[in-house]
Length: 264
Ligand SMILES: [Fe+2]
Ligand SMILES: [Fe+2]
Image 1: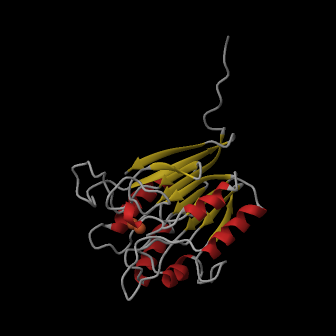
Image 2: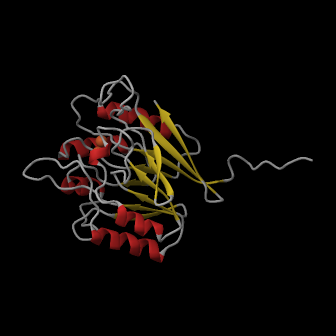
Image 3: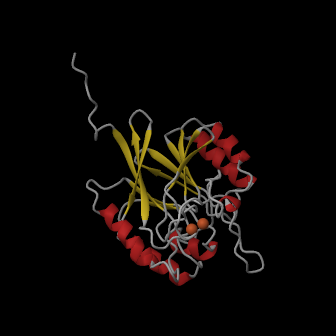
């Protein structure tokens, strides 16, 4: 008896290109050139993805000139661009470059909500300000931000991606696990209350990885400027020789999500 096979393209409702950790201004990493390589691969996709997600560490030192270069390189992408800041970003110049300098929806933070092609992207600012000039590498999402997230998730139940720089779970890498999101329990509680959250999209770990959080996928976008290998691998602790990587997430009509990673 013949079985019907779903059309492999028409059952995809949304295509998300996801890159992370471009670190513009990095002195070792050829950041602009590596970002162009990843972006070129995305720009060659036909039809193009519906949205480009950047999960932070846009710049390496958070200098205005690094954001100017990031904006210039990323402007090759003409579609919707949704971003959140990472630990290497500095909030004021980041907001100036990517959010028109406007204050955040919740006090002081660069949280943003976006609607794209029938889905929502809730961008959380997990950046901890430098302390006495020392960059803070772990991430924090404050109670006030979680209240904003909960409210955003409550009024609109379309498929939603929660995006932040810091993975809310350990990824099994000694270099990264101490600097993940601190106290992820309250975030898990909020996401747990909202079944329309499809996945959590993150960066920071510089690796093509997937785990679970609040019963849903947590997906690392890869690393553009470098890759952080497993402890068991015979590579430098931060591997600048690795090819830039990015992710493509496909949201199917039935609500499933499939992720493909690419290196370029
Ligand atoms: Fe990074
Ligand atoms: Fe980071």
